[in-house]
Amino acid sequence: MPSYRGRIAPSPTGYLHLGHARTFLIAAERALEATGTLVFRNEDLDPDRCRPEYVKAMYEDLRWLGITWQEGPDVGGPFLPYSQSERRESYLHAWRQLRDKGFIYPCTCSRKELAVAASAPNEDDEPIYPGNCRARSDAHDFETPEGVNWRFRTTNGEAISFEDQHLGPKAYVAGKDFGDFIVWRRDDVPAYQLAVVVDDATMQISEVVRGADLLKSTARQLLLYLALALRAPQFYHCDLLCDENGIRLAKRHDVLSIRRLRERGLSAGQVKARAFCV
Image (cartoon, rainbow, N blue to C red):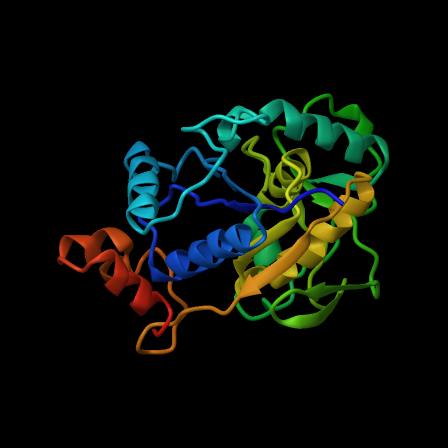
């Protein structure tokens, strides 16, 4: 078995908040306990939302919390580059594999069409795709992915189960808990599901530590690991932090961002304590 390799993978679309702090502190601690390697990956795929000032803040805020990593965009490592915006060829290679094997199909449904036809979202997840474009057989007519959404063809009724290292056994059913999901967006940006699978496999990540809001994403990604003949890592999903109204923390909660708490004069120790008691 390979040695422990964990990762922290923030996205520079806003300032990191207390929920991120807790997840990344847990990831760093698990890597340390295993005498393993912690990888920093900059998940800057979205050109419309990612900002240089947020990239700078990610490094500063996480180091201020005392988190250190052995590989990353700023320190190098054997799996360069560590920023997703520079890893397009890897994603294209995976897209071609999925296209050639018939696992994905082009989808031209508009948002309006999906809003009318799709079932209601599961919790805060995306609506289940109604299958309008499933019968298309022209995938091989596309030399490049841009211009349409590309969806992974799931099998209705298929159960995807895994043992979470924190929350125990989990299982989700395709067609009920999630549907045919996007792996490449019509604006020519690889989707989160595909990018993280390719990167975690390439970087030989042995355990993914992230929030429990991504449990269904894990089920989707396990299908991609299987389709691409890649070895899947272990998963550890952290409990989510909520605000005083019981709403899950998001980057819109700027008052609870690490950056704002620092500016208010809180110490790193105080921020850590808040991250584990909110």
